[in-house]
Structures are given as C-alpha cells and as structure tokens.
Amino acid sequence: MENNNTFEVSSVRYPQVVHMGSDSLRKLGQEAVELGGHRVMVIADKGIVAVGIAETVQDQLKESGLEVYLYSEFKQSPSLEDVNTCAAQAREKKIDLLVGVGGGSSIDVTKSTAILGTNSGNFNDYLGLHNIPKRGLPKILIPTTAGSGSEASQAVVLKDEVDGVKKVAYSRYLMADTVILDPLLTLSMPRTVTVDSGLDALITSIEHYISLGSNPPTDIAALESIRLIAGNLRTAFAYGRNIKARYDMLLGSFFAGASSSAGLGGIHCLCYPLESLFQLTHGRANAVIAPHVLEFNRTSTMTKFSVIAEAMGEKVDTLTLVEASKKAVSAMREILADLGVSTRLRDYNVSRESLSDMAELAVKSGSRLLQTNPRILSIEDAKDIYEKAW
Ligand SMILES: [Fe+2]
Image (spheres, rainbow, N blue to C red):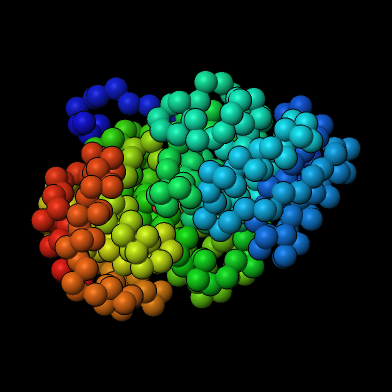
C-alpha cells in the first residue's frame, strides 16, 4: 500500500447527520421519528444508567410518542455473545430503531445489534472486511466519552469469548445514521476515563495521519482531532466541568473516528499485549507505548511529524525539518507527563523477561495494523521498542 502522495484509490465515509452543541440531545425525539422509529431500544451501559443519562434519553423518546425499551446487559468490553443476546431481545420486541448511548462499548453493541435486526444469524457470521450483506436497522449514536470515535467509524470491535481475541467487523452498514454530540452528557466522566479515552483518541488520530492508508479527507479530520485534543485534554483533566473543553474533546474524538478509514499502525499493534496480558485499558496501553513507537516511526515521514508538532501547539517555523519532527515526539511526552501517565513499562508490572514474547505476539497478531504503519516493523524492532520503553 502507498500513501496519498501517490494518488492510489482510497475512500472515506461519514455518518449521514451530526447534531452538535450544548443540549443537542433535544434533537433526539425528532430525529427518531424522521428515521421511522416506533419501537425503540436504548442501549446504554450500566454506568450510564446509574448516572441517569439513560433515563433522560428515554424521556426524550417517550415525549415524541415512541415506545421505548432499555437494554444494558453487556460487559465493559462487549463480546459477540453480548451482541447476539441483545439482538435476540430486539427481534423479540420487534424493535425498529436503536439508540446507543455511552462509551465505545454501548456504541459498538448498538451498531452490531442494528445489523442483526435485518440480517439473519449471529454476528459471528459477519466479522472481517465487508461481509455484511444488507443495511441494518436505523441507529442514532450518542457518545458520552471522548475517546473511541466509534460513532463516526464503520468498524466495531468485539471480544470472541471462545479464543479471548478481539475481533473486528468493518462495513458501510456499520456507519451511524445520526450522531448527537452533546458535551453536557460528558461532564460527569471520571478523570481516569477522561485521560485514557482522550489519549486513545489523540494517539489514534496521529496513527491515522501518518498511516500509509491516509488520504486528504482523513488527513483533515485527523489533524483537526490532534489540534482539538492536544489543546483541551489538559483542561478537561484539570476541571471536568469546563463545557468548552468537553465539547472540543467530543469533537476531537468524533474526528478521530471520521479519519479511521486511514488505518492504524505500530502503536495500536504494540499496545495489544499490554491489554491482553497486563490488563491495561486500551487508552493507557496506547499511551505508554506511544512516544517510543513515534520515535521509531519519525524518520519515515518527517514532514507529517512536523505538521503534527504544529497541531500540538509547538512552534516549528524556525526549525530544521529534523528538529521539527522531533517536536511531535517531545510534545507527546509532555502531555503524558502533565497527565501523570508513566511511559515506562516497568511501572505497569511488565517484567523484562516477557518482552520477547510480547514482541512476537504483537507483530504476529497485529500484522493487519502493520500494513499501514509508515515504517516496516519486525519482531526484532518490536523487541527493541519494548526494551527502550522498559
Ligand atoms: Fe484506539
């Protein structure tokens, strides 16, 4: 695969409608009616139910005369089985519209369940690239964390309980009909979720921007995401009730999702063993390894690195290209230090002896991710990176 400089054919997809701004949730009822909903299932994780957001969402729908059911019986890291169970409920209740509200797990369960509303069988049948035969039920997605970007992407990630591996499905039919970005729903997000999900969105956008699969529209979205998150994550961390910072974080996360067709790279590849073997959250695992992989990738595309540095607030116009590219890596280190995130593997109970096995696991299971990494990354390289990060 070549990057966008060579004019290879590539594509980009977006949700049909996006409502945004403070109290944009009030658009929900009208939107549900316009999408032809009568019997609506609200899919929200238990945390969202506990803080009362699921109830507010249900009230909005009921006020528009719709019949509403709530579903929240799925795990924090949802599985294929969770989706199949949720879909069985939706079929039984003859649901014709889905509303997903919450973090990436609620959103991904909603997107997958919508597919099973019109396609027969289990979601296991539709994993992989473009294996979903027809459009699912209409779906409205309302993210309450600023991190996964799943509301703007055509991918879902679900755990396969049989082998314990996270599986991906990718299809135009997984794209949202409507997205609502209301910062008021994100004000109560706990600090660790703010940091881990925000860093995931920032790092994801950086990977999209330098990816060999990037194209001009994904570059625009990814750069805007980097600018918004690098400029607001510290504020959202320091004072979570700052609506402007929360709104910019929500937009930044949306743009991370909107650039996802570019593909990922080495950071997402090398973070996998930290999640699966050492139980770090996805965002934290990405953050720990990010500066080390960025340093490895830097020389492959120094112009893009200098643009990233600028988007992160660095002054680069008087620097040489080499110096400017290094600023992207140092800016990443600085934001992690300000958020109190250690980038040393030993601080997360990773033993030095496990680094070789981790390198092999990462490169073998992440070969798809490495196809779009801007620098060839071997098992030996992965081991070197882990050693430097230890
Ligand atoms: Fe990610």
